[in-house]
Length: 213
Ligand code: AMP
Image (cartoon, rainbow, N blue to C red; front, side, top):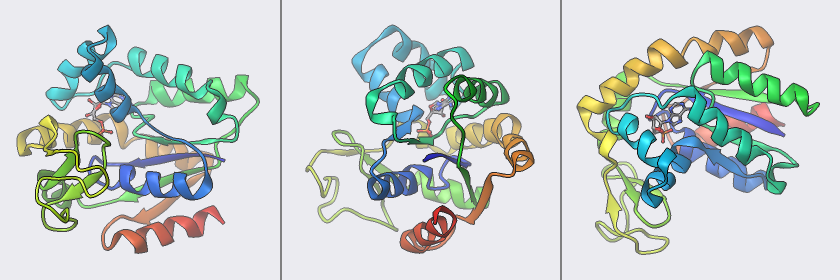
């Protein structure tokens, strides 16, 4: 099964795609996580990407397409995968289509997590992320048991550089301009599945799973 999780920053793509990936035993491929790791490792690509990410701008299609092409070739992707945060532009979507055609594969679902942009600001300014394992928390909606520490690995919780309000608004603008039009692209292919992304995490997971049955 090959699934795209689509939606604005803060719509819950990361949270929901991880839950679904674990349930179906397929990898969750987050381009944001891959770029942050590359930046942490100090690779050339990572440092280039970091500049755009820190400003809330999109990283170039060339870099992203290269990363995804490489990652989806891995053995663990043979049975399928979930894409979280890719594609985010028309050239990315078209490149994915080409790769899939070359491999004789298709996409099963594009899960579109729909959310009001103002809720995004509230969600993302309160988001905290484990610096060790990447687990996500929220200061009000999902606080850790011990303040500042990850429940899973006790790593320090940090606020992402791009989770400050000004950067969030830039990310939302990039989403509206470059990414949101892809909803129509996938709508025309008949594979978009709309899910209201507000409310409790388990209810949203349930709504997603209805599409996957
Ligand atoms: P995310 O963790 O998905 O919110 O992504 C964080 C940042 O990584 C984004 O704001 C972009 O700067 C960059 N990024 C992640 N995925 C992509 C993509 N598919 N295309 C361009 N930039 C991306």
